[in-house]
Amino acid sequence: MQTTVDLLLAFVALYPVCTAALWIAGGLLFRLFEESRSFGVRADGDWPGVTVLIPAYNEDQVIATSVSAALAADYPELEVLVLDDGSKDETEAAALRAAGGDPRCRVVRDPVNRGKAERLNDGFARARHDLVVVTDADTHMHPEALKLLVARMVGSPLVAAVAGAPHVTNRGRLLPALQVLEAASIIGLIRRTQALTGRVGTVAGVLGMFRRDRVLAVGGYDSRMATEDIDLTWKLLLAGWLTAYEPRALVGMQVPSTLPALWAQRKRWARGQGEVLHAHFREVIHWHNHRMWLVSLGALMSLTWVVILVTSLVFVVLGIVLGFTPRVFGLGLAWGVAIAVVAMVQLAVALSIDYSYDPRGLRAFLLGPLYPLAYWTIGAAAALRSQLGALIVGPGESRVVWDIQREQLEPPPGGAADSSPAGP
Image (cartoon, rainbow, N blue to C red; front, side, top):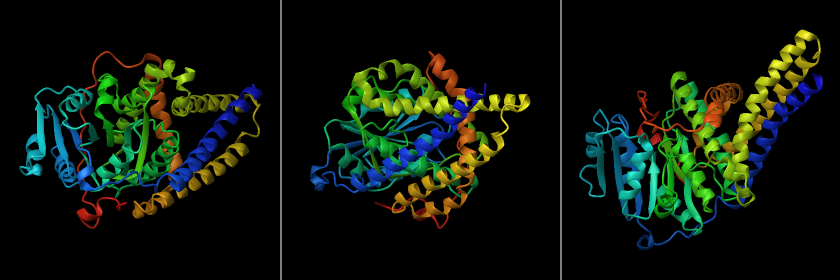
């Protein structure tokens, strides 16, 4: 029993340290060699047309900001489609008021709530341009975001999708402030590292650009998936295309500020990751897809770490009862200190890399000691609650119909101008 416990504890102890080192190294390499590269920014007359899709369901509190930001983009050839998925509130009217009669914007309303995936598939079918941007209804893009996404996209004909860089704007409470750290130290570093291989594992719905023909060729979004954006990204990668990351394409987003809202979001994310692994893992493990192993094994190993963490805790408790693990408390304390140091180094590196885009993010560094404890607990619980079952069972047969209850938005400190991150 002691040998088993030692092996389990070694994996639990070393996995987060090794992954943190990988993400830090990858983030720094991308920052040094890729982030500041120019990708063929061109004269205004040469920019290809772009269609922006904004799917919405009961979003009358937030849709105006997203529509206004899209129309204010510094981009010469632009189409904006607001995809109203059977909203029961005034989403359509609010979007039309925000558009103010601008002929570049249309509201496409379906009286039936069919789900985000089906609504986006309809948007891709309607789009006039080959480059399509997807963004959420509670976000606001930086004016330069579209040009930066396009420049990164046209840098290689093999790139099928480019992920933008989300930054938290409602950061006045504890939970949103902790998510500022997550956006930088987890999302930002991981995407930078994956981008070095051309395999960014999630081109998220918060802001992502796609080549329309390639999305249609792989069948678009799967309406059965809880996280349709991860599934589409994996399908594009498995079809042989590359995905990229443009950290200078900024988008402000609202994040959950209460535990129930955060828990519901993390359960959905965990379920979606499990469904994607179930649907695609057999194809991913083939040698011709070995360049996707960093993405897929990272997702699988994270779940494995959670399961083994819980299992090892059970063994530790049994060992204490049976008298086999007298060193467990001292080792646990030493590991906790080491993890705290690693986490603070990761946060410091991530926030430093993002400083030119979001100087206010450094304020959240003071919450660094709380971050690993809070988010590992929530993430581990969500993985056990939703991801493990989804990995075994896979997606359901019925489509996922979304129904997001928006929280009351807090005004940004210093007015609207202070609500978005700094520019590139």
